Length: 162
Image (cartoon, rainbow, N blue to C red; front, top):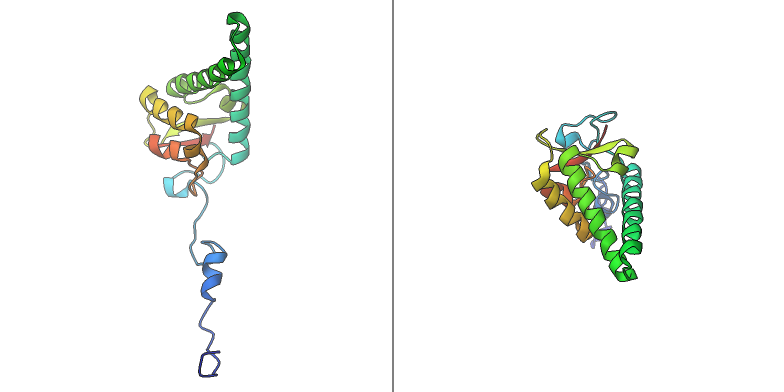
């Protein structure tokens, strides 16, 4: 009802329904992840889902931890030195493998890879930029609707299914 006591005509959804329900309830058709990038909805070349990406990250981290633990025993490093070594090993393997092959060991096991939007190989320079932002962690936690973190957006890359 308005202030004059008359009932307002129903002209559509209340304004709170358009933003509380998200973009879809406001009438925005977002499509599937990767559609804006020209990627297929499913199969090879489609944007990889969160689960496989997270599993690949855990596999890569576990392998880095294993290598760092071996080095720590060999050189008698303290726990803080081993933690730093784990981070450095993780960063080095992510940089080198993504730069050369477009995939890490964990991503390969999970059937996903990193691809440039223009179709060219990722290369060492873009892989380094992507890896440095990944190591900072926060950019990797901020995603867009195409499942690209800020580290992927900065490197013009996307993680896709093989």
